[in-house]
Image (cartoon, rainbow, N blue to C red; front, side):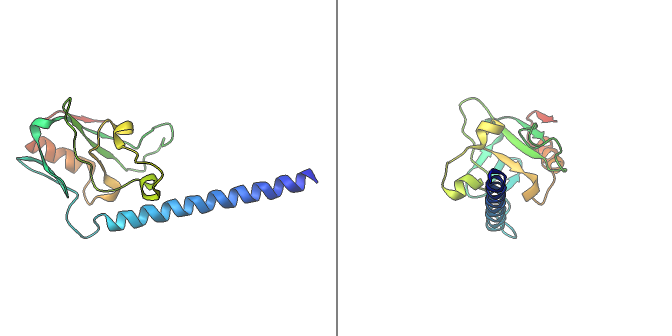
Amino acid sequence: MIGGVTGVLTAWILALGLAVFGLAVTLLLVEMARSGAGSAPLLRVGTEGVEVYGARTVPWSEFAGVRVSRMRPRWLFPFSLGYRYVTFLPQPGVRLPRIGVRTITEWLGVTSSSPARLWGSEMVLATAIATVTADQVADAVELFGQVPIHRG
């Protein structure tokens, strides 16, 4: 009798996990589609600084550097599948604008998580949702920015 109850509970937990995962993926895809597919660019790198869509242009003097890295935390994502993140690091005391896409937890209204906890900045570009590569962004920053670039 106990084996039968355990099997039923395991099946319910598996079904619930799959349903939650499916909902999370669906919400992510909807948000990605709404956030800029076929519309204005998420950001533009130029001589004046970095212009973030829907926010201010951040002058180069407000950046301490730019970091190109894999998905984080690395223990959870040992293989990056080629996806890289570009993190614009602020000077001390500077708050940079956030780039476009909300997280799943924000979408669900559970929390207002901040990319700063994981990345060290609010201004993080996930190249998986962009039409440019991390190296192209880093090259543009190198051309216009005069800020250190850390490629990892």
